[in-house]
Image (cartoon, rainbow, N blue to C red):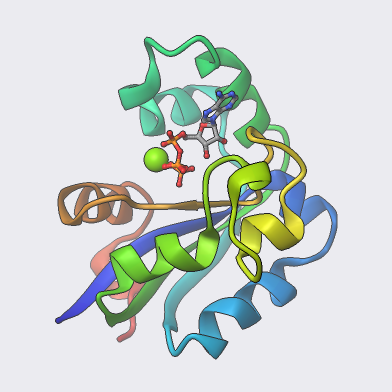
Amino acid sequence: MREMTLSILKPDAVRRNITGAINSYFEKAGLSIVAQKRIKLPYEQAEAFYAVHKERPFFQSLCKSISSGPVVVQVLSGDGVIALNRKIMGATDPANADHGTIRKDFALSIEENSVHGSDSPENAAKEIQFFFSEIEIIP
Ligand code: ATP
Ligand code: MG
């Protein structure tokens, strides 16, 4: 089933100028980038985006990290793209990520792990709406 998911290339990836290298992983897997923009998240917006994690011990540090520099937010489209993107990204902690995944190849740490991807259809819909209006998404 054709789906859409929200992807973020995090500040650690933008800082190292590897957004194109990461995008090639999506494109090689047959996913399409149907919306994409470079933005800088204010800290308050990072808190809103990561609200589900607000009770976790790393919440403040995570919000600081994602708002520390520009990010590239994007909408990916493809068959089963939500689960497929998580597979391409690899495990949250790069130490546990499979070979050939983005996080294995690029992540610096469990926190600066280069990419974010929505984890369910409900969250994908919410997260896409958080960053994009309908006219910015060109399937
Ligand atoms: P994401 O939601 O970013 O796609 P994920 O679903 O693999 O990643 P979550 O458990 O949702 O991981 O955590 C969200 C983000 O919080 C992670 O991507 C990572 O940057 C950070 N994070 C997760 N666990 C830790 C931890 N133990 N210490 C520091 N940061 C963490
Ligand atoms: Mg998550």
